[in-house]
Length: 200
Image (cartoon, helix red, strand yellow):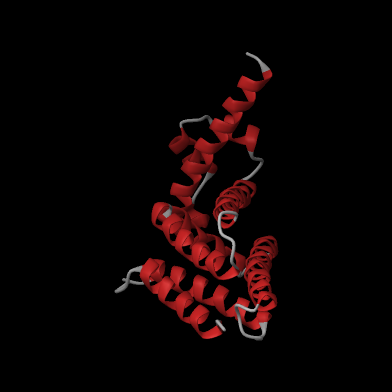
């Protein structure tokens, strides 16, 4: 077997483990999930699991990083297609909603991940990095809009944080209550109102 084929097989095996881990963590929570249960779901030996990940926590952290990296790469590809800051923010919101609908299992996993972050410094640091990256993206688009004259002279930091808080709030409320709203429509309503209020 050549090197390229071995690498593809490795990537496929890791993706299978991630998918199995996602289901286990979402269905039973972090504490109740074991490497044995993930191995069984992924149809791999426990020894095979430890070949890729040294512990449940390492797998937990890498699963989050892997899926978030894929998310950001997908979002960046959509943003490149739009010229104006306003359209890029609206596209960001629209595509984020579509991705959510297609990946509800991962958003449920994020609730498990966040709950662990209240007691774990490593998870807290990862979520802090995610928060800063997200707010930084929104802030950059807002500042670009202000400089180009399409947005009013507003506090870009506070507005970017407001967008982030609305994004996180609507998504995680949707997954933690018996929702009486469509998450994509509600999210679009929030962001469109913010954008309409800051446009020149």
